[in-house]
Each structure stands twice: as C-alpha cells, then as structure tokens.
Image 1 (cartoon, rainbow, N blue to C red):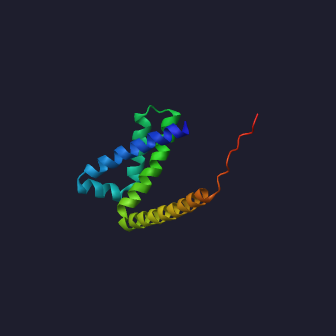
Image 2 (image 1 turned 60 degrees about the vertical axis):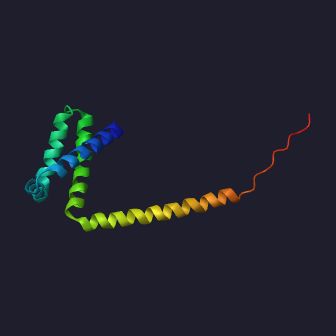
Length: 118
C-alpha cells in the first residue's frame, strides 16, 4: 500500500509540476509566495480526487513532501545547480567503484573444470 501510494504521489506530483510550468507568471509567483496554501491545496485535492481512502491519505502525505521539494528547488535555482553537481559527483564515484570491481572480477583466475574419468 505504501509503495502504491508512493507511485501514485510521483505521478500526481509530475502532473502538478507540468500544470505549474504552464501557469502564467503571476499565478506561479502567487503560489511561490503562499507555499502553505499551495501544499494544503495539493494535499486536499489529492485526497479528494482519490476517494478519501487510506492510500489516498498516504499519497497526499507523499505529495506534500514532493511539492515542498519542488517548490524549494523552483524558488532557489542555486540549490538545484548544487544538487545537480552533487548528483554528477556521486555518479562519477559510482562509476569508478563499478569499474574497479569489474576489473577485480575480470582479473580473478577462472578454474578449469576437469571431468573425472568414469
């Protein structure tokens, strides 16, 4: 149920983000300046649209987190740039570790299988 609500919240957050990008500048600025209203509106709308079930409640909670992160990144582009750099550093480190492990595995001797005479 939690995984389903997480997937549902991801899809809904993506939809809200696409709608947000299409809004006029004045409305986007209003939503930025009134973050609590935006988060509450998204949570209530999600809970209502998905039938008021327990999964809808979990999805609304996840969506509230996603909306907070997205609104923070949208209002502070330098944070987005820093997170992008951090992600590229992590990917570089991951690639180096994967290459090192791959070389270590390839350098292991492969034992020959000798069949026993019957």
